[in-house]
Amino acid sequence: MSDGTDTGKKYREEAAGPKRGLRCRICTGCGRCPGIAQDGAAQGKLHILAEDALMGTRLPIPGSRRLAVADIGTTTVAMLLYGEDGSVRDRYVQVNPQTAYGADVISRIRAAEDPKAAQDMQSMIRGALECGLERFSRKLRNGEELYLVLAANTTMTYLLMGWDAAELGYAPFHASRLSGAETRIGGVPCFVFPGLSAFVGGDIAAGIYACGMCGREEPTLLVDLGTNGEMVLGNRERRIACATAAGPAFEGGVNKGVWGADMISLLARLKEEKVLDRTGLLSPEYFEGGIRIGNVTVTQQAVRSVQLAKGAIAAGIEVLLDRYGIVPEKVDRVVLAGGFGYYLKPEAAAELGILPKVLAGKAVAGGNTSLTGALLAGRRILAEGGCAGLQKCLKESVLCTKVLNLAEEAEFEGHYIGNLNFE
Image (cartoon, rainbow, N blue to C red; front, side, top):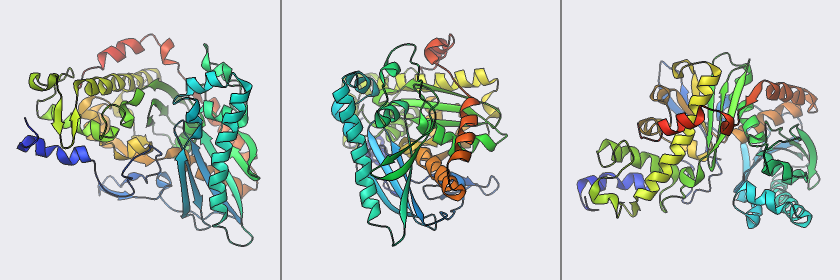
């Protein structure tokens, strides 16, 4: 099957990736893309919402303070500024400068054992936030002041606050500082979301808040996929969370030229065309050199990387379902978070077995749920004139969320092996 055949042509659009909405030519995985939600089961229509996709309606920002929100990722820092009418007034995104100390959290935890390096990383991330806030300050009108709400994974929160991160990098991976915090960034008052554990952080706590899990009777599954895959299943009474390593497979690191969500669509298409079998093997004629699709070549190695990541995510979902005591059919909705989730086709994910097939029709793209949670929290803080009420709410949310360490779950290995096939 050459690049010039009809079958090769069918893959060109998927290889190039969709060109719609706010998608950048080069995706950094910042997840600032708006979400997609289903507009009523009867109509079955899809509509694109603003960054506060999960709220359904735009709400004004109370008072004279303008709300800024930030999501500190291991790779990317994303920030939004909201106007008084609740619309996005400005955006700021940059690569997390701490990448100079390593691309992953473990590298930075090890580096932070040197007090000078820890201080440098704290200055780096605060400097990045200050750049965003300085930009936002130029958008303010007379009499307006900024207030910042941010969420981050646990390691990023520790490094931002200047806390000793050593405990996060060694078994039993205990995090002693998980409460919400208040600080100032460049003179701007700031609320920092609490974390759930050493490996499930404030970004996921913000996602839970954004999804409204704490007020819903029906179970929601939140899936945030990146280098790590964090998942939460539950409702207002109880929630169970976990995290599993996915590697670069969902962030475009396995095949240059093809971003992760597009790779999932391509592999699902190859499987449908019988070029890729259920065990993850390309047809014999493509096993050595891969298959040319558009301007990229999908290799057997790339397929294997996706397969391993897929197995970990699917196994994590199954463990959550088992521990929660429900079957997939009982899940009311699946919220796919982040930039990957925005462009992931649920049907393709189900075809490869990332999601149970019964959940494909229940999946919605939530956009950056970390930023949405920060937006909701910020509105509450400004409306109430302080964060005491929010702190109490988030504390109860954390207490009602049990975090599983999948390495200690006896059934995880069996689920993982059982989910390696594309089915």
